[in-house]
Picture 1 (cartoon, rainbow, N blue to C red):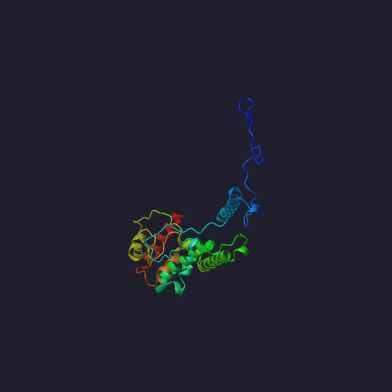
Picture 2: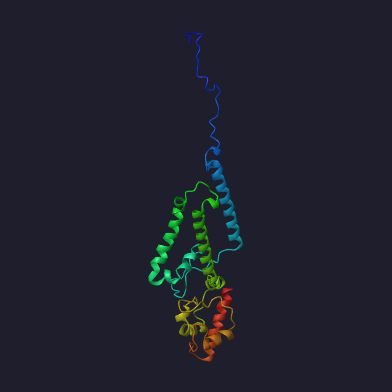
Length: 256
């Protein structure tokens, strides 16, 4: 090395003078890894999630969920159901080993073991590969969980009359009840204790608004009863019975 204007530096010939971009090593050099996590793997995950979300939205548009009416705390006969994604737990609690004196086993122990096993699956199966046949423990546990949830959901939904529930829980149209009508006086003394002061129904009887019955049919039901309504509830004359039926029909015509 000479100092001054003619200064020259001698370097290590093993170091290239050309600068190269900081490129990562080829992933084939790493056993068990085939691609970069970012962006390759995450991009694939995002695409799969997007396809699933679009498909799910299409299903909800084609088959809307059976929404029910507004919550009525006075209706003691109403049987609530959880949303569809919790129906499998609802069905699980119908079995003897998960209900009654074993209810804590059904609501805490079984779900806790199931979700805990799924959480521990990656730690229990530490195989280097990601193919299903290379991860028998994790794949087996996931398939068992999916099959159990699908079967319990199917069993629960199979025994529910969704159309009847939706029809019975439709929002009732609000109508102005003419309380000066002679038929309302008859209704007040015979029917109001069960059907409410505005025919809206209650815990003991359904709403009388939105029914599609003629006056003759209403007169017959009032005398002979129907469903949980026993015969002989109506106490009055034939003229009062006619006034009652015509009043109920007029209220339903107003609600249309």
